[in-house]
Image (cartoon, rainbow, N blue to C red; front, top):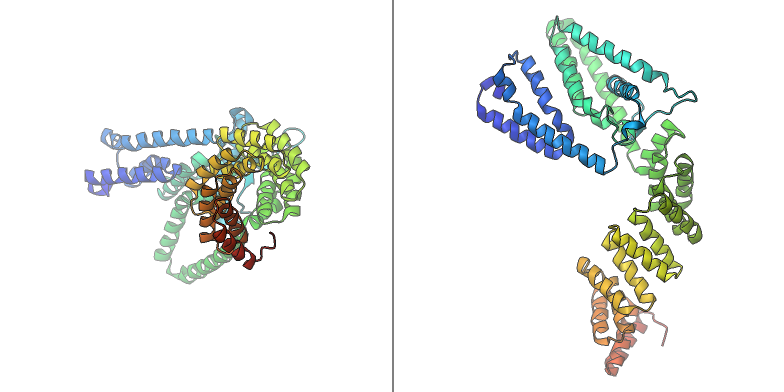
Length: 457
């Protein structure tokens, strides 16, 4: 609108929309480059005013681009510069550039994760990575040659290149060499010349109309079928990562780790154990894997094996709060309360979730006889989760054992109000009432407990 009507208000609107876009997703930072393509398409001369109007866009792009890189770096997603050589990075970028184009026309081998290639015994990459730069140059050369006859290919390929360039792994982000989700926006550029070409044939070659309709129908139904089949892969994390494992076999630990985590979370402990064991063979120094294996052993009741793996994980990475938290829980389950408390405190120091620490540590304080510290932890977690009945039951037990019968009775009454079928709450409330000298009420509470199935005295 701004280019065609020359009203400044549309430039302001475009800036606002771009700001919202960059706040939503970092990939939007390429938009200023696309503006030059719009100028090219509209036959604008690159005068001083045309360049100055883009300054706000480039300023925002620079700011949000640096923020995105900084966040990726802090999150550990950026690979070390020394991981790959400059030439290898060029080959990876060319490989992604070419393969994304190929997948538009031949949608095969889609997966949620595509690992970097492995070097062979002589230190070489697979042949396709050496061929990819040549294919990329030939493609770009053909596009530049086409400018003599049409602007369509250069505009479309320029849009594709500008919007995909920052995800071509010149700078390694994560441990995947490519991801199909990166193409949602770039494929608009590749679809543009295809659409223009079909439109030209439709208007100028009437004898091809039925052929074009037939081919379009085949394409639509074919893509629809492939989409339907791909949706099955995304049913859950088991099917999702199984596809990656089937595609890449024994190359990366990430798929086994993620599938193992899902299987452990859904109770398939034996299968999860196998996945973690395979993953550790591939990445023996991965502290997260060792911790996950420890969690699996703990869930299976094999506490010493769990401890062994937690200890190894901490040796590899002593800054991960989750490992200390999980080891603390196993210490507690095996009644090694002092070690459990030390690990809970370390996990808290490293920033572990208070929601995970407080109820577990409170239980350890309760069972080890430090009732006031148990009450302190339960007070804090109840402020966070005031509707959770079991927390009042535990805090009430701490008050009861610490001889604060009035406070204990308040908590047990809350439990009875929230969970009236819990016989233990009536039993403990009865003990509080008896200790407070309210014998008749205590007997009534005990009768209710027996009515709910309590067999004790």
